[in-house]
Image (cartoon, rainbow, N blue to C red; front, side, top):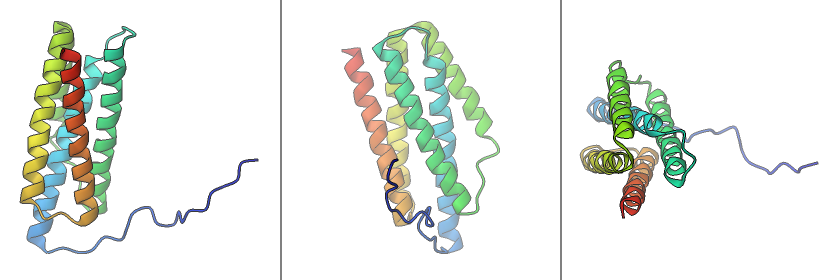
Length: 162
């Protein structure tokens, strides 16, 4: 029988503290923006996947999975703060479908160039939000980690273009 490791599972996330309303307004806007953009990113990758069994498809699936974790990060933070995702996120879901589907139709090079373009935009967006918003320490770490992942996607897609 496997031995259970000892962890304190009563704390899922560290305790949140109240913030001034103006700061909360910026945090809400930032989290909604990131959640919405990650919704789009998930769909781009989802609709770029083909039936082929190859390394590019595998890496697209890995990237989609990574973006799904980002989406969950921001959705969890929205709810922790007592916020809700944007009611208009479905528009970005559709945009992701369009970018993903049409780049897939145009082939490998279009898939890679779309990935580089979208991830470059994401990195810039993350940077602006990191500068403009006074995040709590835990959320800042999540935003910084997710931005680092986006840099990794750019590097991966660039290496496939070579």
